[in-house]
Image (tube, rainbow, N blue to C red; front, top):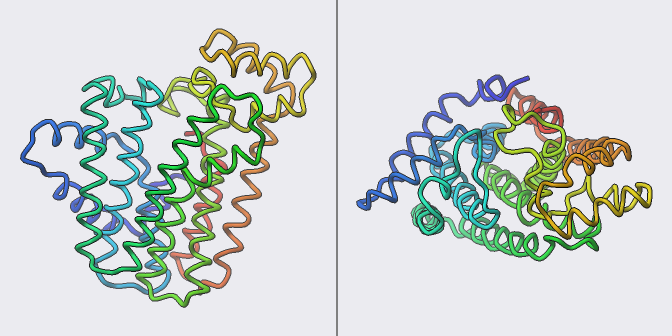
Length: 322
């Protein structure tokens, strides 16, 4: 199953969102336009906007504010990518040079700031205090997640609970916000709105868990980034944590050394330890658990093609190879 197939139902809406993105990217400052267009046209999955559109559709929303809010969500996500790549000193994303590699760190950080501020201009224009509260809270929590991840780098004492907290803050929170906004636009009762938020939170968690698996199992041509980036940055993700907790003493010692020192020199031996200890199978199993929780969360939605797409999205999140 491909995202293109999943997005068939919302094809016209996605085109409308892309039109909003192009229009709202405009700036009189040429470098802002250049960097912003480069990163937004890089072929991302647009999962978060799609999530908002699908849930709004499942709840019968027929207005146009979902296009504007889906673009807001994508701008916030794109801003985090620009800042992430500077912090991580990444050189490749989606198979292309990162913006910081091409335009420099200063331009990437400042254009990320532009995207954040443009997103807030757009959400204020929607003139709905509940919408603004959801997005403002999400943006703040995402920033806290970035700092938590920074604190965890090169720390061999990070356990699964600390790792999951970073995922919930840094990745899952924007999925949650997008899903909740779909519920708000669709006029869902409070309990159903919260169920939509729950769906988004657990879908986002499953998605990130598989991202971390692919850093040790994917093909660079498919993932669009260098394998072993997480290890090079000293990030103790779930596969590494599993080896340290469940692997042999020798395997655990190898991983601890690699996390403390960073770099790619130990990648082959760490990869061997990951496979030997069953770490990838464990992480995939955890992702499937999260996807199952997400499916249960939308059980109260009425049957529709939108609901079917939301259910299929949970399977895509754990079965994908990129």
